[in-house]
Length: 158
Image (cartoon, rainbow, N blue to C red; front, side, top):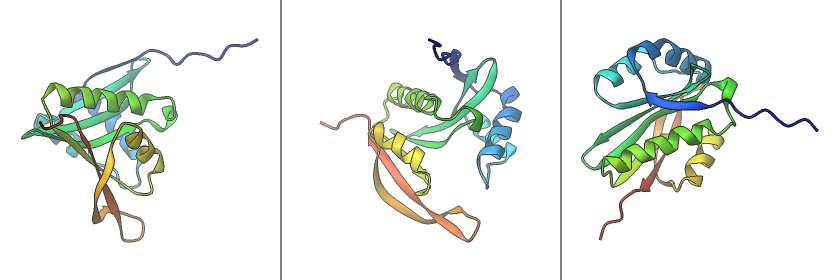
């Protein structure tokens, strides 16, 4: 009987400027309307919590979290297309939730395309729920696409 190979070990660490080329490459291969290299650089410079998932000494995913005034906002979470459906997106999301809780965040938010069913399923699995829609939020091939705004309470008010 042949046993399936285990996924190689991964680590999550803070993103640094040396990671930006690989992060930008993953972004370009993942989205029709990707963030620019400069946007990622600006997130680092602004002090956002930017993290990368390392698989076999290579950046294979990344995420960016903004924390302010007791709230957090997931700005981006992406896994290299070659490594999707292996649980890495969930690992990154768990890291962001841990960091948000560590910063005493009360609630965490994100926007997601309604067409991104895989991401929506992951967020719902982790307790996010839709609280609003942002009309014409995302650039799309033909016009604009709305965003679903999802939220999750991390600290229950007494």
